Image 1: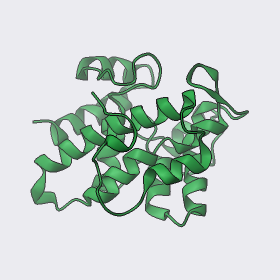
Image 2: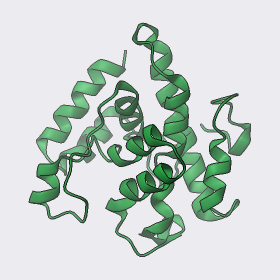
Image 3: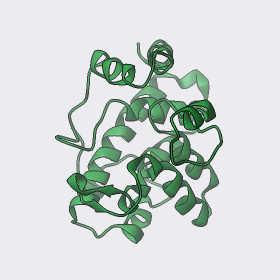
Image 4: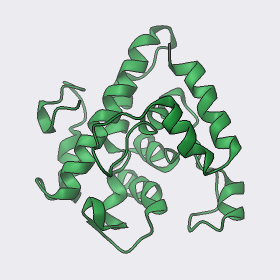
Amino acid sequence: MATKGKDFKGNKEGLDVYAIIEKYYQKGSQAYEILTIHSECVAKKALEIAKRRKAWKLDKALIYEGAMLHDIGIFKCNAPSIGCMGDEPYIKHGVIGSNLLASEGLPKHAMICERHTGVGITLEMIIERELPLPHREMVPISLEEQIICFADCFFSKSGDPTREKSVEQVAKSMSKHGADQVVKFETWCKMFLD
């Protein structure tokens, strides 16, 4: 279970992710609470994976910061059940967050935002499904991006944001978006889970 707010000790030095979040979210609002709790859960799981993969020489600070900021764009989306009263469709939250973090001078974090949805969104999916997204690949590339994307699959912002889904529950959810999504998730399970 995540600990709320600045009590979470994911990164003692470096980027103040809460200061960035608080530029866009009213502290204490429903959206802020859901975003920070969800992000802390994702960060904790991602850092646990990174800790078990010491030989990979991962950038743990980027993993923590990226996990904490990956959903920063949700406030501009129409998702009232999580306190977000924007006009944009939810599928755009990654691109919105990417633009915000790029404007903050955080290009690596911006790419994490853009590439984290599901197991990534391919250009083919965008075109075939006529998704309201720019026509480009939005699939995680670096190991850090993949680990954050994988960890995010286990936590929802609706219901109890601290409840971790099982591998089976995630795979079932992925199956709604195509067999290729499940295959990618299963590949990550082999890579990231012991």
